[in-house]
Image (tube, rainbow, N blue to C red; front, side, top):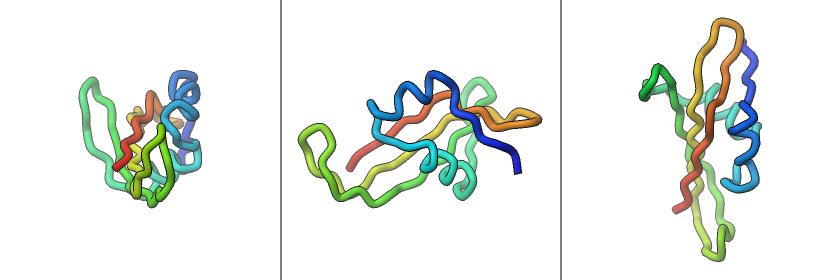
Length: 84
């Protein structure tokens, strides 16, 4: 199993976008991968949230890492989160 490394850019958004490295790794390891632009890949996972984010209450949070599958590791470029 390849290690997963979050880029400095992805790490800098953990707090601002509300995700953890563990959630990103779980998403990549357990969800289907889809091709996106520039040879990158993405995966999506919905997680129960039932909490407030930026002053509003949301039931679900979706984590969507965008990453590259390198020969020796998976490098996460960025991570998007969606609340609904």
